[in-house]
Length: 197
Image 1: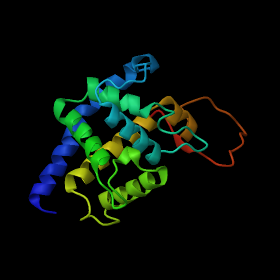
Image 2: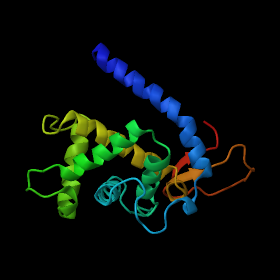
Image 3: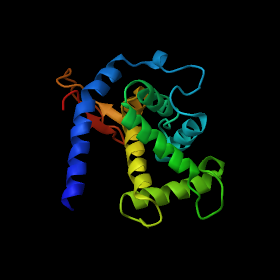
Image 4: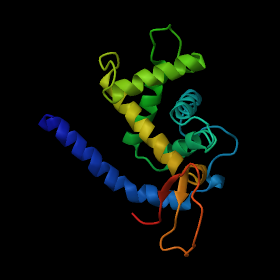
């Protein structure tokens, strides 16, 4: 890694540390009534919101637990872009969504949202592999790869801090908590977390 890349990575880490308290306050005051009930995005364009919804459901599809759109992840990210993120971070998210929407894959000349569900999943798999060094990196621009990783991180953070994400995927064990003797362990244990860091 060269010095320039090391400085960029360090500034990203410091930036995340600076935004963490603001996002934490936002989480504490956020509930479903904060999310617009009309289904229209606040900060994102309709095409960006559609792309974000499709992308988030590919990253976290519905299984035994809720999908990302069921947990209102796109609405939450739209709210973050509108009310929490500074203009630089908001522009990065919007630019990343626009790049994904307008990327022309090998299969034809259609925007991302007009591809079939299978083509969308294949495209995101290729993009994800390239972004994390497991596939053809030269096929995608570096900006697209970096913006995709940022958006994926937002989707995961928004999902695993949502009520559905926590209650359906994590086995919350408050510490210190009450003593319960002789409890049965579930067949498929969830990830256990406590109220400590």
